[in-house]
Amino acid sequence: MEIEVVEGDITAQQVDAVVNAANSRMRGGGGVDGAIHAAGGPAVLADCERRFPDGLATGDAGWTTAGRMSARWVIHVVGPNRNAGQTDRGLLTSCYRRALEVADEIGARTLAFPLVSAGVYGWPKEDAVDAALETLRATPTNVEMARMVAFGRSSYRLISDRL
Ligand code: AR6
Image (cartoon, rainbow, N blue to C red; front, side, top):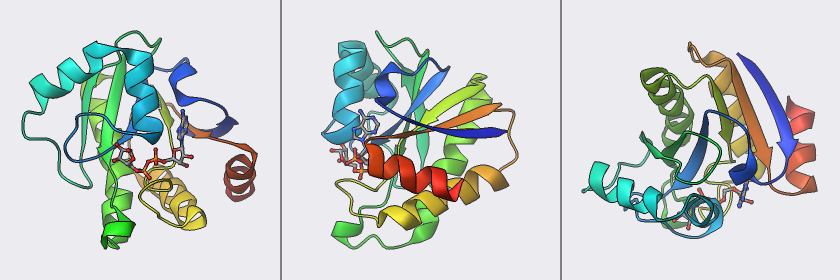
């Protein structure tokens, strides 16, 4: 699998599926979650309600429609909330591994990822990047391309330095 990095907005990526840094309620939120629901429109929330009536566990992934975005699917993952004491790094790497497994289930070949847990959830950025890259590299998958979408210059530099 090819791994690349771009600076930009994840909602504008021309990929099969965009990955969302959601929360376990799966009913939208701020950050990248808010941007994805705003860009995809109400169909994304409606699909979340239908497919995830009880939400989604931390570390897990699940798909919905991408609504009005050019991607076909959103793969929602729930990263650990470090600010709430969830410090188990295995929950963060699980998000990337489970996202690839869900992509394989639905047949998505190109994915765009945000830096899960590195915003509101307070995971240190450097380690969030390392967790993402090492898991994407180590997980067997049919996905052909994983694009890390950096929100801002400093995240872009951080990811490209480590790539
Ligand atoms: N495109 C790409 N990356 C973005 C975008 C965007 N449009 N917007 C923000 N980021 P966060 P978390 C980056 O806080 O830490 C939400 O309320 C951002 O700079 O979105 O996993 C959810 O509902 C950061 O690097 O996600 C949850 O409650 C990264 O995306 C909670 O926040 C992740 O930041 C999840 O927190």
